[in-house]
Length: 233
Ligand SMILES: C[S@@+](CC[C@H](N)C(=O)[O-])C[C@H]1O[C@@H](n2cnc3c(N)ncnc32)[C@H](O)[C@@H]1O
Image (tube, rainbow, N blue to C red; front, side, top):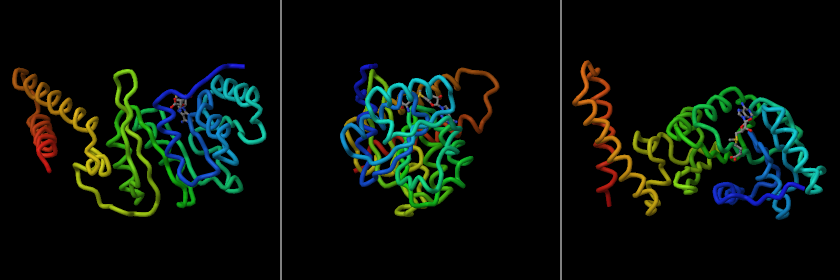
């Protein structure tokens, strides 16, 4: 049996299960999240789906090795296409991919959602694209957190079609409306890094030739946004 334990990142993501009992883990790879939640007795049913035949084979073996084949159904599917209405899925996890891919999966999979599902989305980059997609499709952001693993900070965004705070401001979409409220030490450290990085980009642009004025203005606006956020109460 392949031994596994959830990484700090995956455990943090799994902790956002909420009241859900029937989950779909999209891009499941080794099926770690559904296996852990099923072992902990927190779910009744899971779809562990992936677009790759290799991950599906590994997930299938892991699920069988843990004696969970009656609880977790491993499916080869692109995005949300493996979800059927009769599955009664209440919570969808999509983790460990870029925000642009998550956005594309949600767009292509809209017809597989009935609007009652909770989405637990954990992009490894481009989280702004995920929040922008959610706002455009009238999903409200219910919770957010940051988790640090091996020097990389990952956002986790929990959303539902409940419209609590939309429309969001530009600062909400870039930094996260709930993260801005929580203002955790990790959030502030990341904000400082973004201020330094954006200032360095602007310095580079000042020394470069033939830089579009819009690019400079855009970076200047972002720097001002980050600095305002840093000094906010
Ligand atoms: C880096 S792994 C992430 C695994 C796990 N979710 C995590 O967070 O650690 C990304 C997985 O997403 C799968 N994937 C990529 N595009 C996908 C799509 N359109 N639909 C379903 N799975 C996809 C890949 O095959 C891969 O197994």
